[in-house]
Amino acid sequence: MLRPSPEYLVLPTLSEVRHSPDDGPSQDGTIEVTLLPVTGDDGVRHLAALAFSSVSLLVEAMGEQQSWVIVPAAELEGALRGSGAQAVLVDPQLAGSAE
Image (cartoon, rainbow, N blue to C red):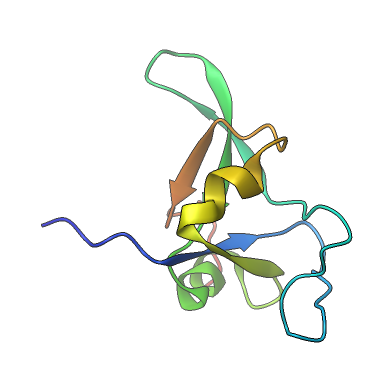
């Protein structure tokens, strides 16, 4: 059975995300998201962004100290433009995930 696509995705970031007074991310620059090298079916390595369908799944996989940002799923492609990401892994099961 297919799960419905989430309206928002939670992306782990490399550093703490500063927020503006309206509680959204600051618009003064870019947010550095976590990218991992993955090998595609074609045997070529690509960079993939990590994304989670909920904060609880991110915490389960990466721990409570992991910084993150919420992005509307419809805006994900634009948000990742220029990051080098060629794919997105949604709700990945990471080796050595936080317990």
